[in-house]
Image (cartoon, rainbow, N blue to C red; front, side, top):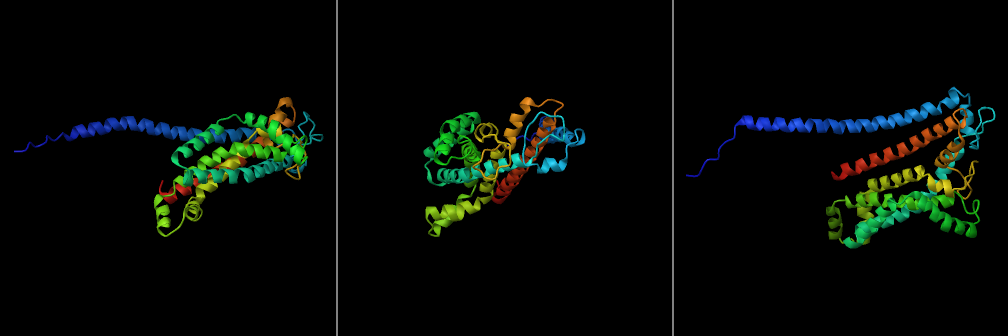
Length: 317
């Protein structure tokens, strides 16, 4: 007769489940606490920036309308609100100009590279290109700024004569594009890889070629992830500091075109805090500029995350 397996007592299973719960519960609450801490830190940063920045209007008596409309952002170390000449529009417009040039250069380059390594390149070539992109993402941005100062700025000066010695929003945007490209490549490649293989095979079965499958099946299916890649690259360009500080030219007035010398928000903050005393108006003005910059990047990143979440729900990943 076959041996009947011995049944373990029900009490042993209950004890093991309770022992696992004693381990799982603290881990679960620690993960929740970490997520909550991240939210608290973000809210704390924004609160600090607003608390310091609003002192410009509440304690120092600077006009809100002047802050929103003055066509310059001069970082004078003054305590007189009637002589203070600082407005948020010039650095904001400068930031938008640099971001626009960045996207014009980075999006086609990043998307083309992502499509190549995802749909065309052999696995070994894909690994090499992806590794190079990740390596570029780890290079300090000040190195990109020095390369742009040595190579891009002289060419812009010789060919176009834009900016001050070639330093302009156009020059900064071109170099920032190469800072944003690795991020766009990585996110776009992940989005393309997330498209189910069944869609590709179905298109091939209907007689489509590689080009048709890529542009009419895979990319439309991954449009949410590709859009998120562009938005995250845009957020990367908005928050870049060292490249625009060195290459944008530093002019504090309102730029009419991207070919002019300008000073985006990050460069304005970095250059203005060097001589900002605790009693001057420039200190709270820079904090308020930081709050605007924080909100701009936060909203852009949040929208990108929402778009990526839509991509994950779409393919059940």
